[in-house]
Length: 373
Image (cartoon, rainbow, N blue to C red):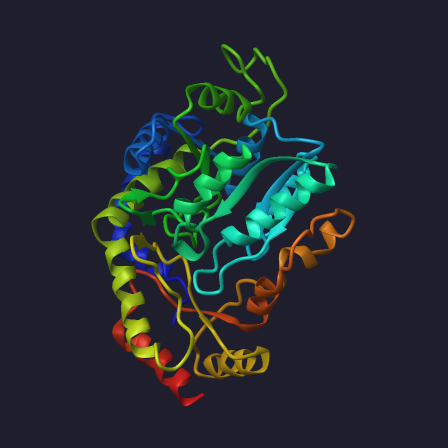
């Protein structure tokens, strides 16, 4: 059994992917080829924003967003404590301070009440300027933008939507990657929409920021690549990956997103009285990057993971350590509020195999082990 079955997906899409990749090689159109711009236009249309700017990976996408907003030294950027390292790493890399915020246990996403407390504490201290919040659409479900947008407006914060796991998710009919002033995603192979290497993208409706990011991603270029008008980075999505993503995006829209939601519904139906299952709030739609259950304690979680492994069933812990405990942040004053829920989740969560191609029989095997424990 595969945790995220990319091999079966490739078999289903093989003829289309092989043809698309071969065409790129025949044309020798490897860097900034026509397929890149085509994909960007398709992604922008899917999400429902004016601009999509592809780049080398999801971490670079966050970096480009922070650079466009001129986030730097003396700035505070609020980040969920329960998320992948890049969400806070990129903030610190730009010289700003990531201020960690607790999450809601039922959705795993940033807690609005904790966010407000953290903002107020930073303002009271007066050492940093609150500039932005990196909302994370964790495990596939968008953060609660109904509330977060009002908070951001009240305190004058930019919203940087980190939808590395959220692509395909939605809230009130609006798709992930459209909620931020600038939004980002990742095309890492295991993401809801993944390529066969690294890749990422930035989304925005702001023309000025879009032009700036297009420059920044190619060494701060001006009229051409030898006209460098600012300090930038080297972060391009190569044409082969763009061609692969075009095929995968079509499959994602036509059947994969529905299929993974059906798989999640089956887990939830069978496990609701056994363990704490992920909650999808009314009006929200998840792309199910992960299906994460919550156990009573670390001992029970580790026991279940060991039993699953004995049966040849893969599982993953996202995440074993909260952000505020990462050694890299030890020298920064990142903690302003209680982060108890994040710390508790790190000891109790377990992600089960889920993907558009998982079979009912495979899911029943997983469920049987959980019921036994």
